[in-house]
Image (cartoon, rainbow, N blue to C red; front, side, top):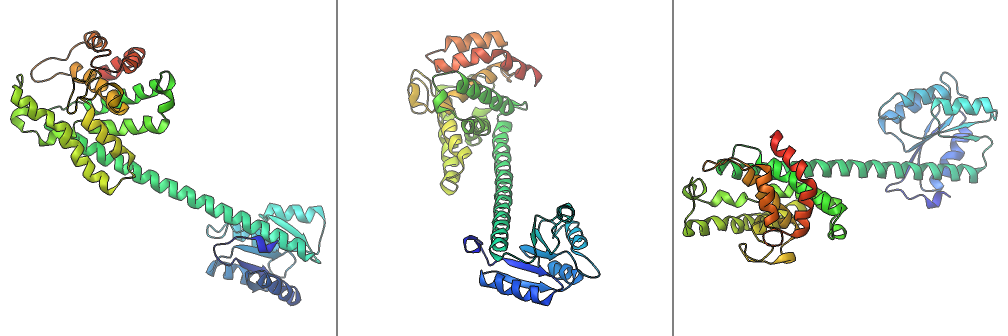
Length: 358
């Protein structure tokens, strides 16, 4: 029934018929059920009215002079603004051939004169509801596309900020690109086969891929004399270096306080603050033990360790894959989460390939 049609506004119906009596009856019927009716006596008038203010639905007679209903519908369907308006054909003809021509012209339905008004009301109501659902789907699709655009822009901005910190460290390679690939691989492997499977989602996998590059963003606050020192740091210098974890997390927290819905920044805070913690509690800044360290930070810790040791530095040449693999295995249960070491060993050939192709 027409009363059940849920519209955000009154539906606008264009009624096209060269019979004044039919127009009058349909006008009264549509208004009675809460629709705004607009009347047209000819096809040309109907097209002009539709162009000025596109209706939600068109009731279109077939047998009209100058331009019949088939021609009117075809003209509507080649107009980008009007092509999606549902057209219900009306006619005193009831042959299969006439109905087929109506659908071929672009109609969505067909009613035969003289009208059964309860049938007409039901059909109009059905197509208005379908039209409303289509608009809602298109709106949701548009919103999803905009959210995706904003998310991609945020991710690009986050990565650009992280790259600034990386360049200050004197690394002109692709450390951040590799680390996020390692993190993605480890998270996917843990999702597929580990005791953490129930705690990891595809959203987590995507999030760590984009948040992990923030791990060393706090290094922008470390003096060049320490950050770029070619030799071993003194105890005092190392204490200053360790502050990059807190500085990075604190600055990300300022952003997160304004945009608490941004999950990438939320995870970035965890990673920046805790990626130098150790499984045995001998890391920094807080000396967290085991699973008290966020999983995202535990994953990034191994990824960053592997890439840092394999990369050339001003004070040393990068180690081989096998050498770093041995160091990772030696850190199983002390430096690193055993589950993450296990995942690394499954993925070691992919780690090697990622490093070798950069």
